[in-house]
Image (tube, rainbow, N blue to C red; front, side):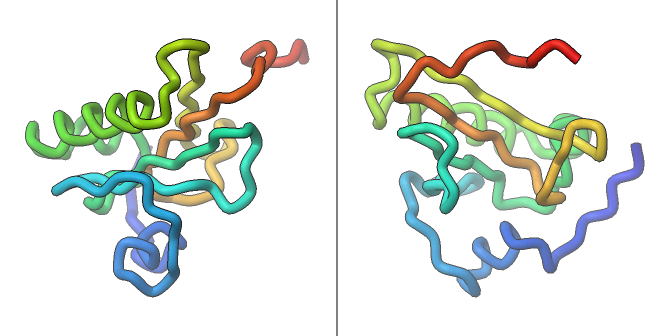
Length: 122
């Protein structure tokens, strides 16, 4: 998969401060904020600050410091939100078939209710 980063995507604009967000956590290399159209009582997006299109792009090209910071940021968001007790789901979409809507790596942290099966039968 070719990875051409579009610096006009909504998350790039959020990172530049052009679009406001409801920040949950900000670290050196990551930003977590509440989704404006939540699909669960807790719905937080966690994005790296670098120009990465999807998870494989990030895994192949990000620095070790960025990778560690991002993974720890996801874990810290779950801890801060008290999700350890009842659980949560992480979703990272990639590409057309994965229905990735924003071409910037992001994981959805979803919690606060029973989320059902991962995929419905086709």
